[in-house]
Length: 343
Ligand SMILES: [Zn+2]
Ligand SMILES: [Zn+2]
Image 1 (cartoon, rainbow, N blue to C red):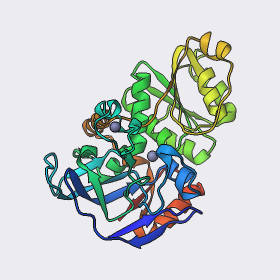
Image 2 (tube, rainbow, N blue to C red):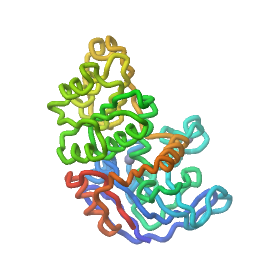
Image 3 (cartoon, rainbow, N blue to C red):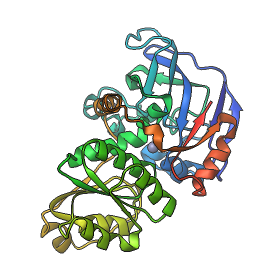
Image 4 (cartoon, rainbow, N blue to C red):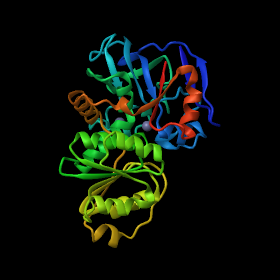
């Protein structure tokens, strides 16, 4: 089979590998879509900067947002069979610790924990060797691209919304309208909320408006804009998906008293005065990292019931042999939405 390595130095290398064979509890998945995440570019593609859970082991096939069809199953596998369409939770935890038992394999601290595309082979390939416990059925009418986007980005957005308890009673500010921000926008709207979007890039603001944002603003005019749209009260919920210090501060000052603020965007730093900003405003500030298996299963069901398709935010598609171009286009900001590699 073919697979793509990410050796650093903004390169992607297509190589031949022997086809994986499923051992006990394992499943071989024929990859139908494998999307690129901001973290792939930030921590692997440019240089191998990631540490710990974001550490990339040299020689690992990249891609942690895979989706496909079961090709073969190993001994003891009972939940899926060849031909099934499956979504993949992108980290295989030990399966036995407190975090794994709650479905948050992202937080597993066992040495056995391995994320697809980071510490074990990922989805930029014809075939993926997966653990059965990381697979979820992909319900109709969702597409393989929908499933790939749920593996990390939409799952992460969904969890942020769950943490904030977003409902139809809320106005939600989303800062950073990259793929996770657009996912937050779509899922908040589908939950009944009204969404205000903020991004520095005009094409992203346009995209957010097309997806149904009630208002979109450039960061410069955002605070005034939020005040005008909310008639001075501020938003019930603010979710940062940008990691920019100014956007995190904007979230804190845009939330109304007793509002909920969630930080989802990774990296960077932020400074704010706790008394004036957080305490006197009675805010809840939450950090949210990826999602859990049960929550991801709920998200797949939610999307299927609503006939809501994450692939709506896919703007660029590349073949496996064009994975290098796919990364380059994404890294250079030539893509407004999500970039998907299709073997
Ligand atoms: Zn990711
Ligand atoms: Zn574990």
